Length: 244
Length: 391
Image 1 (cartoon, chains in turn green, cyan):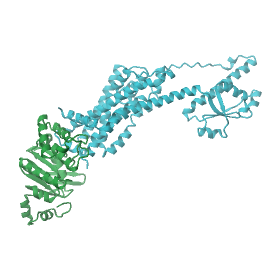
Image 2 (cartoon, chains in turn green, cyan):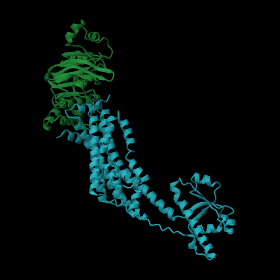
Image 3 (cartoon, helix red, strand yellow):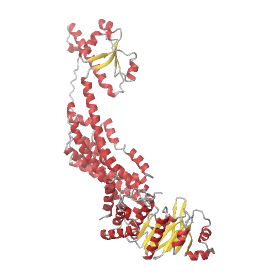
Image 4 (tube, chains in turn yellow, cyan):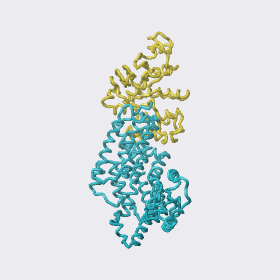
């Protein structure tokens, strides 16, 4: 479970995140929806302790990220906005590197690695050097290495960004599988349809603030719009930066 | 396995697969310096030998005004060349190293017993042309002295009267110390090799990782950043030490290829020398690795890091250049300053001297102290929020 309380983060004059609070529960998919530049990535970066919030705190399974950031990172599987691989290593070696850094025992790491390669359909390229991977192959490898330590909480920053239709469908199914395994799945997106389809709970962020935190049905009810797209536009105030 | 070791082995393994890094660290870095060194030395040596033995060929204006003088010069190895129209232009444009001009009234003055004047045109700022100029003036001087002595004898006086003081020059340089003076640039080559050997790795492991967007996922692992930094520094050091070892080995081989015996010199680039150089250089290996990583962490891109480090590469040359332009007596405090201590220490070894245990200990202690400080600064920068953010 991830609890976010009153996060603030400024870069110089710009207030990127201006009071973000929400809770992402186990066994649920929580979507962070917002236009480009709304503060989604910065919020996530504070969740996985890459940045320190100016104000506010993050609790992962009850652990405060400010006091024990290493324990928090152990409980998180993170697909950041930056998903670069080591191009002279194969997918297997890329995954193994993170397994060792996470302190996963060798045989357990190997077992989980092969399971992830199976589920993510990576066999064809798993022993090729990462140089020359397609966008989809890169994302799969990045997800596999992020989940190698079997984290209870999964953070995905725009996981379907740059994927083709088939890969996107598989990615969405994979997120449902993660939910079915009882994990807490939190992902960000600027694609309304995706969020509407997948999420048990939608947190809408605009200009660094949470403007709605509801289930999809409640959102429709609250805005009086039967169409979610209209509902989002109404909440955010404009459709700019969003994609259907 | 400790996280630092995990990072270390991964970086070494990955970079062993990168041809460009390998070529830079194991071929270009360590071998260019010894090769350049051998080439320069061969040119220098053969030029000095040639200049000393070959006939001195210089244009002469007005040769017919002093046939006897010319004949005497010929006997000393002078080969007069056809006159040039403008001696000043010829010297300025480097058409001739020097031009000898004999005025028309030379013979008249000579016969009267007045000082007969000849003119030597040359440019003293052309240091490489000093040798022929000196040879010519020495020949003229010798001819003048000889004829002066003969005139005194003709008047029944002892030639010794005209030379109240005789200077007997006693050069105390040994073959090895002459070699050392010639090779004071050598320590710079070792520093340069360490610098180049680790440079591509240092850029790649910080600025490169950030540019390829793999630093952010790396930092999402439950490992303190300083541990990651230590692993990376370790990998850089391994590559730069390898460069240094190859370079030192190449120098011991190159030492045999240089015909220094023709100049009566002995370089003494043996295995003992090689070992001592490596030991003295160890603190610099760590210091440079930390410094390069620091610069790479500050740079916004791979290219920017490359530019900064290219400029930084000149810094280690400063002690070498300063000491070769204005040689100073080696003082014990110099062993406390990294870079300077390697410069004076290695030069001392080259001159055939040896270092005391205290000097080596000072060099290592102070060197590692400064390296540790640099490492601490780098670790601080590594901990900063902005470091991982690529976009």
